[in-house]
Image (cartoon, rainbow, N blue to C red):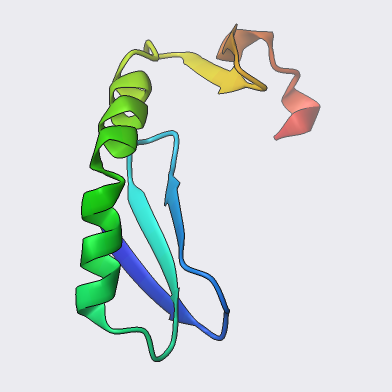
Length: 77
């Protein structure tokens, strides 16, 4: 879990396709409040992490659909 403090107004929680949890919080927000927020979202986090683990090697999700990386054209890199 990575906490990034920025000059923002809202607390946001994001899970990357690799399963990393990223939290962006306002600069002056107390860490206790941030951790409490994460606890309240634990079911959602577990659901999303389980989905990340189901993606087979060599595949990726795009707009909710599973694609094979070999389908990508080289000019997209």
